Image (cartoon, rainbow, N blue to C red; front, side):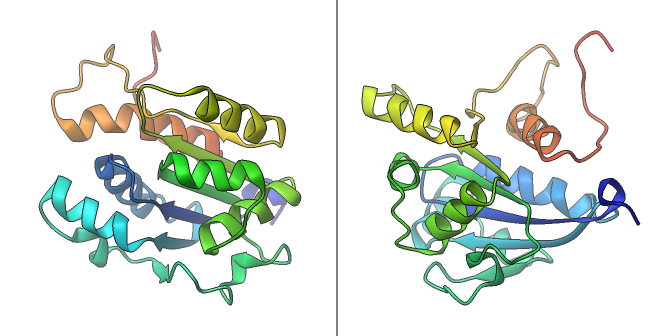
Length: 191
């Protein structure tokens, strides 16, 4: 099997930023793409679990068929550049996490894995959900972009006329899925 047809191994990190709906829709969509994905590894902070329960009103994150890692588990395979994980998505990404990544501070599994993605020139996609942005936030986004990361703000689009919160969140997550190089059926402008 050539590299283009090889199934992907993807890391999903969920931080404690508001916007759990984005993480939920992302995990749901990744679960349907198993013909293109070998493994999904999830790192979810305690704050992320609390925010998910508050914003969504349940804890369905426990039901996804993925491998979950603790935030301080530096024995996770993707804490090393020798791992087969080639894509990492941080969704939603808190500004604190983004700042630590931009500064090269690897103080937990999320920031270490992000550091690995950048140093190995692999795909790192951050989905920040914050407004307004300070100059510090903007400079951190600039630093990560210059290092090879992709900033995909959680800014939903409306031209597909989404009819639910999930459909609105999917307008962002579908872009993330595209950025991963995964094929999907989704609304495409004028297609």
